[in-house]
Length: 279
Ligand SMILES: NC(=O)c1ccc[n+]([C@@H]2O[C@H](COP(=O)([O-])OP(=O)(O)OC[C@H]3O[C@@H](n4cnc5c(N)ncnc54)[C@H](OP(=O)(O)O)[C@@H]3O)[C@@H](O)[C@H]2O)c1
Image 1 (tube, helix red, strand yellow):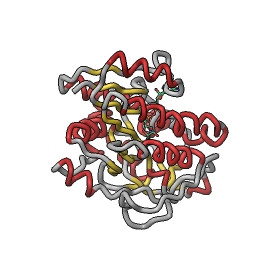
Image 2 (tube, rainbow, N blue to C red; image 1 turned 60 degrees about the vertical axis):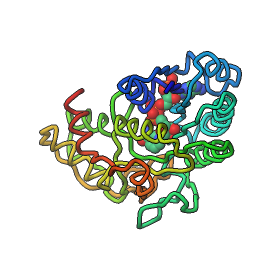
Image 3 (cartoon, rainbow, N blue to C red; image 1 turned 30 degrees about the vertical axis):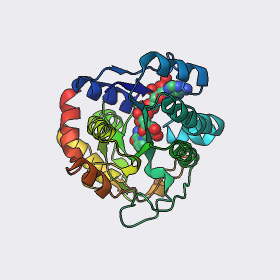
Image 4 (cartoon, helix red, strand yellow; image 1 turned 90 degrees about the vertical axis):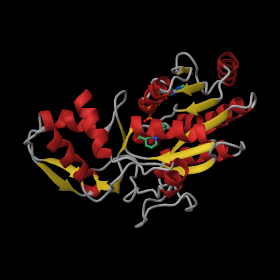
């Protein structure tokens, strides 16, 4: 299977390129300088050159707060570009795999969101990702994977931020305890994308690791594994204001993934051990 990964230098992009390589699949992962996904001619040329069976879109403006101030760029990259990529993949008959997010929901749920739960984004990031979903799903055969709270090597993420903060705490570290979600280790996500891509699944699939936790609980586990004695204190969302509104509840129902893949989703604590051990 020939795999073309757009946004190949990002957090998920790198993991996807590595996963395809591990499986012995010919893979290319152009970064933004090689292929700007907002440029239809550049995308078409990349597809024509590589002749992929699978096109995976890992390019995005994933910085949630930046999207609030860069609305136009967010919609161009997270929305319009997705249509460009989906059509370019379809032309030679390649399958298109696109990534989306729990931010397309309102975040006010109390039980895991199934794939068909009504969307109601509360941030520019979420709205731009929803526009991307619409454009991706307009092309038959598209696989759209919603995920959350990704960590791993190759891009800014909560684990690495905590590691830096824990190294020089300067007093109790406030971490939000009233937002619940599920961390997801980028290499586990890449494995899931490769499995789904190979299976020919289409439509929407939710994938994240287990078990659900708050950011505070996640931080405690990171500190424990690092052997840090720094004090972490539970904070409310209001105490730590951010430009973009965050979902209070980001847990996704992963039953469809588990049926398609024939295995349960991985435990993020195993990914955390690997990440901290390897970096
Ligand atoms: N991170 C999370 O927690 C999370 C959670 C749920 C869903 N997702 C989704 O997962 C996907 C991957 O996110 P990520 O965390 O891997 O993000 P990331 O690390 O920021 O990677 C995104 C990549 O896209 C590249 N890019 C930006 N503009 C581009 C352009 N015009 N043309 C080509 N490439 C461009 C970026 O390059 P530069 O660095 O040069 O800008 C970067 O390498 C996104 O769809 C995101 O919405 C992420």
